[in-house]
Each structure stands twice: as C-alpha cells, then as structure tokens.
Length: 179
Ligand SMILES: O=P(O)(O)OC[C@H]1O[C@H](OP(=O)(O)OP(=O)(O)O)[C@H](O)[C@@H]1O
Ligand code: HPA
Ligand SMILES: [Mg+2]
Image (tube, rainbow, N blue to C red; front, side, top):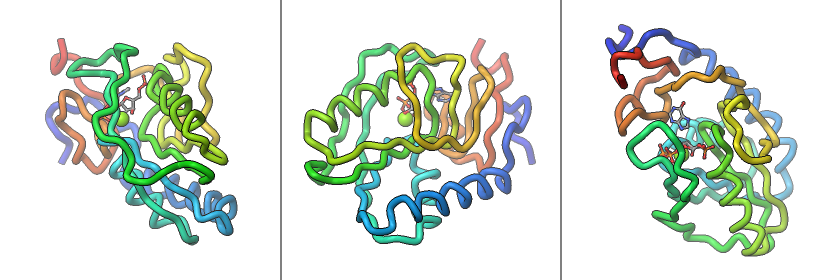
C-alpha cells in the first residue's frame, strides 16, 4: 500500500531493480580486472550499494564513508563534514563512488577533492538518481541510473528527516508533509 505521506510513486521497485541490474552489467565490464574499491556514501546510498554490488560480477572491495551537508533540512548547506571516514586507503586504487542522488553536487565535489589528495589511481561516480537542474557546482557522474525532475524524492535510501529510507520505491512527498 502507498505510504500516506507519498503523493506519487516515481520509480517502482521493479524499475529500480532493472536500472540497477543494467548498471551492474556495465560496471562488471569496466572493473573486471581492476579490483575496485567501491565506496558507498552513507546513509542514502546503502540500498543502492547493496543491490548494485551484487549485480557486479567481478572481484571488488566495499567500504563506506559518511559525510553530511544537509543537516535536518532539504537544502544542502555546502558545508560538508566527514562523520565517518574510510577504513581503507584509496592510494593507488580504482575508486568507484556509489551515490543515491546528486543534487547540488557539493557532496561529491568535496569527496573527489579528498580522494585526489589521497592519491587514488582513478575516481569514478555511479549514481542511481541525478537531479541535474539543481547543480550548483561543475560535477558529472560517470554513470547515471535515472534523471529525476526537480522534486524532493524519498525512498530506497533517500530520506526526509531520516524517515522513508525503507520504502522499496522512490516517490514524491506530499507538500503538507514539509510545509
Ligand atoms: O549533491 P548534494 O546537494 O551534495 O546532495 C546529495 C547528497 O545529499 C544526500 O545525503 P545527505 O547529506 O542528506 O545524507 P544521507 O545520505 O545520510 O541522507 C544524498 O544522499 C547525497 O549524498
Ligand atoms: O530529493 C532528495 N531527497 C532526499 N535527499 C536528498 N538529498 C538531495 N536531494 C534529495
Ligand atoms: Mg547521502
């Protein structure tokens, strides 16, 4: 049943699974002899990371990093903080950053700067969702699952004040929920 806070489902569980499987096949080819360090950005990317990595039929290493730029609101502050760093060194590694959504691009441009400074061999980005209209900095993903309209979306990892990450689909919140 549709959650009462959700106005509309944008992408169903089945559509997300198909996009993820297709991206997994492309990434399998790209990384089959590279033993990449696949880095999920907590918490939003958790669902996508677990499904995508299982769709990649090659050896890889998983790690997680938690950065925050949004606080509790709906607007990125641009002030990115590391909440949890990686356990692994990126030096000399082929790094694949996994994100649930790119919005302003600030989170990822900060991470790319850090991984460059730490001497990663290559740094690429895969994101399930790309909200291109909202970009505030020059940042492009290498692989995009779905381009999303400029609406606040939740589900499949994405939250509104920590809620709705567990919805199996991606939907748009009703205005009355955040107004
Ligand atoms: O392109 P940007 O404007 O930087 O926004 C995208 C980032 O914002 C969200 O994370 P958030 O910082 O809200 O934390 P969360 O993943 O724990 O929800 C999302 O998961 C991305 O990581
Ligand atoms: O549309 C969004 N939904 C949830 N979290 C987000 N972080 C950036 N954009 C979004
Ligand atoms: Mg995030």
